[in-house]
Length: 164
Image (cartoon, rainbow, N blue to C red; front, side):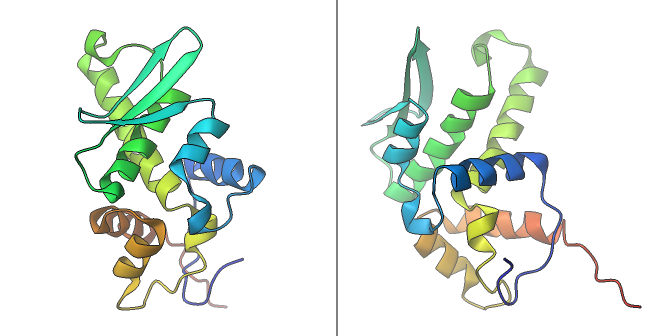
């Protein structure tokens, strides 16, 4: 269902995968996006420590560490970024060619946008509202910059209306 004032746009395959995972696990509202729960649902432990964010895997044990020195909204952004590495990437970035590292980082950035502001949730908002950035940031508990970037991606994929 498209909310009043939300444009019709062409979603990406990655965006559709994230949305479908959320729907399958009954994440339907912004307040459902608890990063501890999402981590556990993915069999990944989440810890806050005063260190740079990272994903670690030892055998079957998986852990995402977010920087406890940062405000919660930035920890959430870090979590979604590291979750992408956990779910979609293989290898140690420090040992791979620069081009592969850059590709993984670009993929993680897109995943972060889709996972922190999922299509099936943001389509309930009126994107033309002057307060949309602040509203999304507040409701989804993510930085304003992330909301701006997400809306810019949507604007770039708007399906033009066909007039007959």
